[in-house]
Image 1 (tube, rainbow, N blue to C red):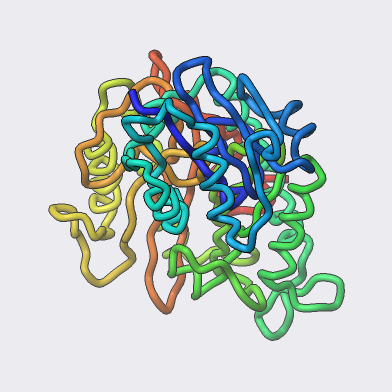
Image 2: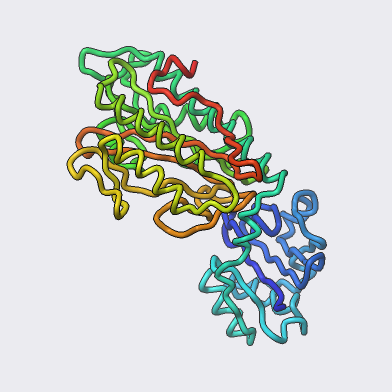
Length: 379
């Protein structure tokens, strides 16, 4: 098989992270065969790489023939040629994430480059016990941050303007997101982005949140942290209401909880992701709502789900497998979410999401928080 060549041009390169277990701004990794690999790093990263990286050999790029030049991509491509030597006569395999400039630089140096568009796909799906522990811990961190947000919401008072107030200031999405991120950082996790979206804007599933939070209306809290040392994610969503809970919101939430339970019950080795998604859609339609999935359109006027049921979680917060209108056989070791939601533009939305792993016995749910609209149930 052709040698595998990876180039990290950013710290979040998932393929490079999976191969080396090291987050680094610039580095080169070559695997000639199992147990025969090499990581080439800048001098300032050498000792850290020797401590953290999962690689048989770690060297300073100067040992590999590095020369300073204005074209840094070209300089790294020169290092690749030196490291590969005559062992790349048949070319090299590269990640689909490889920067286009580096791809071209390799070709210009006479290397035949083969794009492996499914690199590590199956390996990354089958989570090891260690990886499962990383994700479970990240999910626990997500729960800590979610409870922090809910505690702040619960401590707020309802102003005469219908907004939530805390410490003599309107309680905003921005303040709540900052509190969530602070709570995560204190326990070794980070989240460049979180969702704390009030109504009616939370009818847009990926709206991050902005401005004051309204009372008596749903607030969607979606936390997907990444371990600072493990690099693995969790993913959690809850919806709460401070004040009076509108009956329409309660019914939407009840339907989503039932749909989550229906989907979760089907998660086992050999199940089809399409069947799981359809089961979730069926519950929502039976409760009087709609979806955008063919055959499960249901009500065209009221709230509906306009996204998939779930996705894999690991080094990336969204990765295979998928729970959507697509044949996708599931297997033991898959870690994924189940996240039904209902949304109505101009009114708001609700979503609930758990993350867990498929085992030979069924679904091991890593999530322990209640599924409730009432903030008091979390505290």
